[in-house]
Length: 217
Image (cartoon, rainbow, N blue to C red; front, side, top):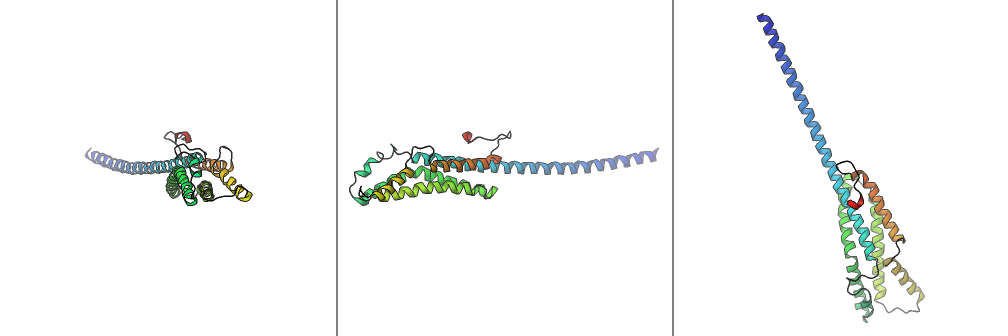
């Protein structure tokens, strides 16, 4: 009987050791899985926030560029008529420059935010958005450079009979000001923003796995 009791105690002790080993291993596995889940959650959140910042700023660039191309802007010192009343060429040129700086200030701020967001997203997903981002920058640059050229002509005494110069000025105006929702610049910007959005869909998912629409960005 005593011998059986000793054997029983040894078996129980061994089983206890095995159980403790299993529990310890399970604890390590569960902890490891928990850390991995936590890391994935953090990584997913980082991608979501970065993607949202890029898309939000890209949409803002599109909006501010569109607003800047509306010809009459009441909050800008009387719109466009006041420059024509300035007789001195240098002062008139400076007046046009000031006018365009004020007009494009919201777009420049939106572009600055876009560039900051792009730097962060590139660290996370690489150069996937570079081509679309470059197209967006390009269209903004076309409008801005055209405005600079227009300001130069605005500071000159242009002969109305100089058809070549008048034609160039007319083309610049079509770039700077437009009410056409389907002009080449508007279309190019729309495509660039849409392409950015389509490439970010993978990262723009809420806690339930649904895609966050651009409207909610």
